Figure 1 (cartoon, one colour):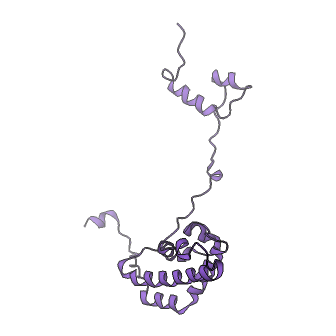
Figure 2 (cartoon, rainbow, N blue to C red):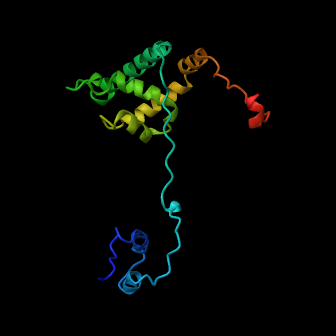
Figure 3 (tube, rainbow, N blue to C red):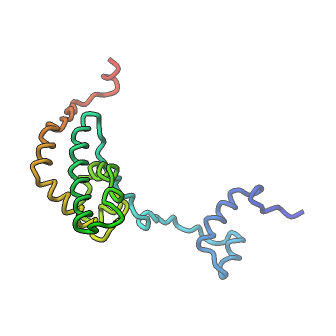
Length: 178
């Protein structure tokens, strides 16, 4: 009775066969089946895969930030609705408050540090509801950043929390147990 060559009876050979399948073609298939082909060298394909992008850091709000959120939302909503109702579509059937709401304002405030240009707003507010909305929002945000309102809100937050300095003394495992 001939010896069986299935993957259950010969698991090592089956593993080798799987490694060879990446380089197997019609010319060397018989050599692979007879175990006459030299094993392929391991290839490092890490350079072919892109590195993972850094996660976007959003600002997290606390109950103490409620006044700042309310002030920012009020300013942005008032200006956006006034711009839409007076410039974009005066007397139109759709009002500015139907296109832009407090959730959009809070999302913009949470990502304020990540907004660098008009297209970066697209992911935050979900695209344009009217032509030129992203450009107008970006200009408004730039004006807000340079205004006294923004600098006043940063000043009321106080200085950033300082990190605890790390000790530079080396402790060996024996000393740590004492």
